[in-house]
Amino acid sequence: MKLLIITQAVDTEDPVLGFFVRWLEEFAKHVERIEVICLREGEHTLPANVRVHSLGKERGVSRMGYLLNFYRYIWQLRHDYDAVFVHMNQEYILLGGPLWRLSGKYIYLWRNHYAGSWLTDLAAFFCTKVFCTSTHSYTAKYDKTVMMPVGVDVERFDSGGCIERKPHSILFLARMAPSKHPEVLIEALSILAQRGIDFSASLVGSPLREDEAYYAALKEKVRTLALDQCVLFLPGVPNEETPDLYHAHEIFVNASPSGMFDKTIFEAAVSGCLVLSSSTDVAGITGSAFTFGDAEDLAKHLVHGLSISGPERVMLARSLKDEAVRAHSLTALGDRLAREIGVYSA
Image (tube, rainbow, N blue to C red):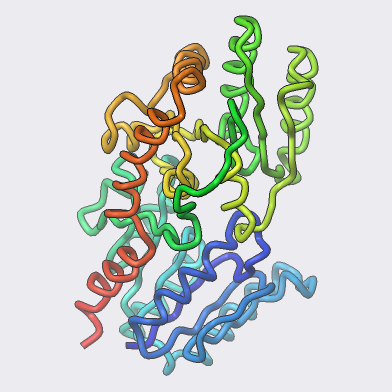
């Protein structure tokens, strides 16, 4: 089978999408060839059966140039792929779906987000199947939707248990955006500080241009709450560097709403962190012990997490790690995707 994959970036240095290079490496084990169209190409080393074609963002190409390059590639490569897999961006299916349907190509969309619209519905109409990881994703409602593993590179994130974490340390790792709700953690940390509880917290991530004012407001809030000495803001780092961040902290906090099921939750779990999440998706796996509602509830969980002994914390973290490894590894994702797409590749 020959597969066309469309994604935003192929770049190991990308702090948000750097993981996708490993996805391509895993998918390449299951198919004859992969052609990749991406908006931006950066650093990567991929197997011989994977070719990357950039729309040109790294070269300063205009939006019209992106569009022309997109249609040029999907037409020129039409004999080099049997099916299309679009990662996250439904716009590519809206642009190419009619042509692919007329050409007899099978179309697959990976989209995992609580928000959606009639445009999402239209994109799904063209698809053979839609993939997501959360039952709360907007795309979970379709009859053609298939629930998938999250796809964590277990080998890269597993600490093996032989590391020294900073005592009483908390990590928040995400793009700094309103949808990620870092302000909930800051409010919870303020409660901890008022109670005299010892902690240090790292908020790691960079904002998009439209969220820079929001990011500045977060920093100002930390100053206003007198948390400067225990809360550190750090810019986003390449995905290859994130294991070191997880391994340096005891507790990982994710405040994204249900429906997003951030991959970082499972990266942190595999890394051996005690994971606290606001997502009911996680509650469905671990029960309520690892989930929180508002800032006050998060503070209660943090108080408990920071107070328990090292062995007990390790035991609690192990329960989520075992589930992440069992059901959400990158190997599990590659195998499942091959089965779901392979039905149509004969």
